[in-house]
Length: 593
Image 1 (cartoon, helix red, strand yellow):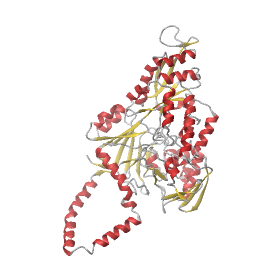
Image 2 (cartoon, rainbow, N blue to C red):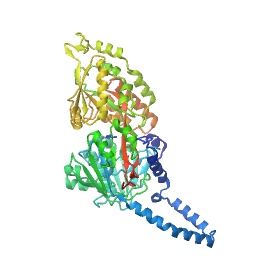
Image 3 (cartoon, rainbow, N blue to C red):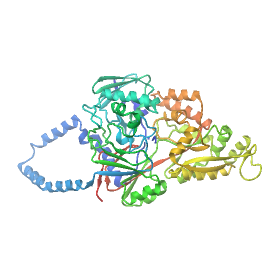
Image 4 (spheres, rainbow, N blue to C red):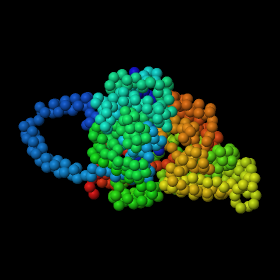
């Protein structure tokens, strides 16, 4: 068997990760950069992960040096050791002056904490309760162990064999052996809304208590990203069967660093340390249970309130802070702001069942009426996007991006001409085009807690007004927006996704619980399914170039921007490790202010 570091596989996963369902490198300021870089550097030869070779070298170095020491040197070392003891004691006392609870504010909390049943997860929910078999280093693209100790690919790429640590258990003490992982894989195929990710998994061979082989019908190119997330990790099937899926959804059992203590959907979430936790992740120094005893996740939907709670010291960390507050927090000497580019795009979706949007000419006109450079001025850190795969995703193509940019450049006159060709004309001079006596007046749904969408929708409103389209803005609860778009009960809306593998497009544009435009193209579905199994990077990139060209030609959705997730942390919080979407709290402590 070949190691998974085969050239094709490594090329496949050189990604910068997800969204939300959603991963990327962070660029923290100096103080926190030191923490992140140090952690990444230490992982290569950190003490918990010390290899046998390193241990031998250290031992040999000590042995070589001892004969050369004089008695005087020994005496000096003894005195130094005695003198250093009080300092160690002081450091120990200082380390003890910490708060064992981390309080994190988030604008949204998922109602389902069991990643196998969830539509979306979060860095403070599923990522803390669950655990993946492996991870991907967002800076290098390298596969890293998490729960698994090692893995191998077969020559044909259709079998992936994992070795698990001996004695691993779930948070409730149930065995987390090869059979438990196999059971979890099969449960995912049964209950997950993303079961299509597991279509190629045809069998799991339990070799012994710590070894299992995943057997695929095709090389699982897209599956590596699934294994990188808690969506593809083990969740306790026996506990789920005993409790029932409904109860397990809000009080799941897994093997992550924390476990659920208190949770009612719609309210705050209290997690407590999982004393059975262990990891092989080299990104962290502490590979056992976290230092924190508790993790309190507070849902604070209003952005300014979220920021105010952080500034007042009532919370220690705020995730997804509004862009309008970023500069203010950066100027606060007690707070550090981290930014994480998203591996995904925010698109403008149009309901194909609407009489106006069923016409390709109208969709083309809207695409040409939009000026992305104006849009991103209200979304700090955002970059304009003209296609559906970002530079941090697998199979990104600069040529395809250029194709999208050239296909529908901002062109006011061309947009008006297309509307006229489609029969929309301003006959009464009121500034709004009509067709058959009906004015072109449509509504865009915007999440009440999504400041970026609110601001962008206002810019869109003005841009579409210049071509005679009356765009009304309707703010609803975020969940209500999602439900309406899934049901097709909307005119226009925003469609955002975050995932490092382009296989996400098969859900965005074909899954019954997504596909907001209600677009139907069986040939495209077949093409996306075939692309899922291409291990060769060049072939896969070419396949997704064709897929994106079809989506762009049909104006299924209009790509707008690639965003940034901002996380603000008080400076008395030490040790969080950012690896794109996940935030590892293994080494985190909260010093008393």
